[in-house]
Length: 76
View 1 (cartoon, helix red, strand yellow):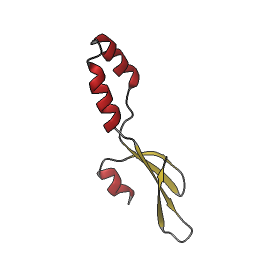
View 2 (cartoon, rainbow, N blue to C red):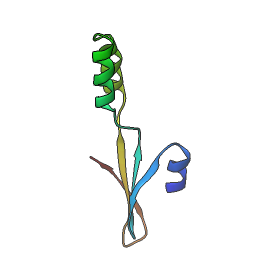
View 3 (cartoon, rainbow, N blue to C red):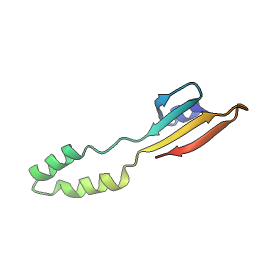
């Protein structure tokens, strides 16, 4: 199950004996976008707003319970 998610673009953020947290997406670099917005006389702000609305970071926790079943929980 983990290898399928990794093949589809997820990456391992953390892992322990019975749990792995997978993440997909990249956080927005707001400092860079603020600099570009000021440098471009606020024109880049349109791009920044679009990127901030569309770009999402998703996290999923996969846990193996005592019976060996994999339980998927969306992590905040």
